[in-house]
Amino acid sequence: MTGDPPREGEASTWGTWIWRHASSLSNQVVGALVTTVSLSLGYMIFNDYLAPPGDLSGSWKFTVIYEDTALGAFKDLQVTYQVLLVQEGVKLSGHGEKLSDRGPGQDAVDYVGDRRTNIQVRGSITRNYLSRDTLLVHYQEKGRRRDSATVHRLLECGPGMLCGCFRSTIADTTGSVWWERRRGLSRLYEPVEGLEHCRNGNCWSDAVRCR
Image (spheres, rainbow, N blue to C red):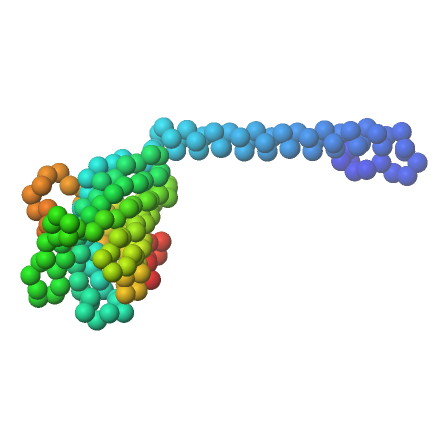
C-alpha cells in the first residue's frame, strides 16, 4: 500500500515516503489553521455586527427583595434604587442612589436629599447564543454605618425588563431582583413589580442562581 513505510532494503524510497507524509501532515496543519482563523473571524463578525448585545445605556430602576437573610428584621424587605448606566460593548458602568424601602406590612420610607446613599455600578454581559444573554452587575454602596457589596445575575424577561437574583454582604442576604427601564418620573419611589412569568420562576435557570 502507498501509505505503508518501505521494506528493509528499499532505502532509496524512504525519502519519497517521508516527503509524502510530511507534505500530508503539513496540509492538515494548514487546513486546521485556516479553519480556526475562519471560525474566529466569523465569530467576531457575528458578535460585533450581526448580533451585538442589546443597548442597556440609560436610566433604570430596580428593586431587591430580601428573601434569605441573617438578620430577621430584614426578611421580605423591598429596597428600590435608581441607576444611570453606560454601556460600551459588553461592559457596563454607572452611578445610582437608594430611593426607598418597604418592610412587610409597613409604609414605604422614601429617601430624599442627603438621606440617599450612593452606589457605584460595574457590569458585564455574557453572550449565550443558544439562550438568553446573562448580565452580571456588581455595585458598592456607601452606607451610613459601613460600606457593602452586592452582585446581581440577570436575564431579560420582557421589553425594558430584567429579572434575576442577588447576593449581598448586607446581613449575608440573597433574594430576587427586578429591573425596569425608566421612561419618566412617575412612580419613581414605587417598587418595581416583576412580570407574572418572573414571579412563577420561569425567568431563572441554573446559570443565574445566586445561592
